[in-house]
Image 1 (cartoon, rainbow, N blue to C red):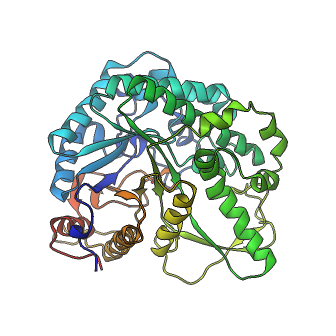
Image 2: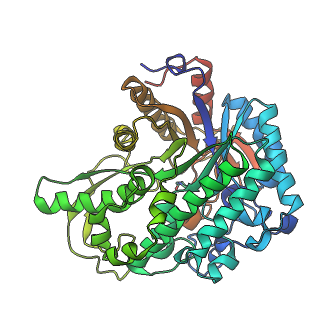
Length: 458
Ligand code: IFM
């Protein structure tokens, strides 16, 4: 049985969103295109052909949305800053309109007793920087640190908690290997160079934020998967090692242990390139952080297999032949297996590298094909169950002594789900994209009741 009272009083209970997924107002206030504005216009790139131009109109409706959060009873909100809304063209001149928006948002949150957690990079690289090489070039890491410094300077009186990168695995391997995310490039194992420059940008940004705002709390968010082999055969165990390596250890180890896992660099065939990088990079990447954000959704069961014959570029370069096994477990509309215990696996895995480091679940949630009932209500039992089970896993994490400090549900409201466009709904709040009407779903009602102590998680 887990109740809110069983969690520490200062536990962060929040919802999360990201700029391009909710803000809309893509060309307002001087904002210039990011790689997602460009990619969304590539024919066939987005399942339903939509873009994030309008999304949830959060840019205009943020007061209503802050009121919604307050009505749910959450005490925290994780949002991201659009780099080109703050710094058009990725330059170093602040857009006063862009800045005014984020200052107003943070102020509205604080006025409602909601603590702002700002993510600096949730995938929306300024298009100009992509044109100059994107994350495949080192200069982008420096540009990112410059942006982080300005953001901390301009917003650090309102925002204390900063997340440098969201899910650098996605930026590197979906953006530069499989190409299913912006910028849609297929560079094979060279996507690992993007991973390196992202992590270098993270380390440089940590230093820049600390110089501007010594009181800041700074972390990074990784998307970790619980990984297990389909059998004890040597080949299946090796498949699990490979995917755990690419997905989890390639990011956890440089950030928390100061070095890359050599087996993964060998799988990628990129060890020589990594060895050529300046030795100081490892130190910069391992800059001490104040917390680690973990995004957890699902688990992978892996087996050895044959390379995919479809011709699609793999998100797992060098390990293309690994097969992802369908265990028959329930899945969400994304096709992601529901496995709440996996949250404990990934928290334990991260904790083992840095036992003192505070952890947050910075995202967790589920997509279902919601419908509005004739009376206007939205009942989403699948999402409610998913939420309950994962909140209960958080209680178990605390019970095991893990330093878990907060849980952010993805997402506050339905929004633009990247390559799926508007066709996947993750919200606790339903959004009618025709009218922008928001309706709290039964999962949102459940969270509200849990937070008031009226219901238990399990
Ligand atoms: O919508 C995304 C979010 O932007 C990053 N993490 C996973 C979510 C669901 O796919």
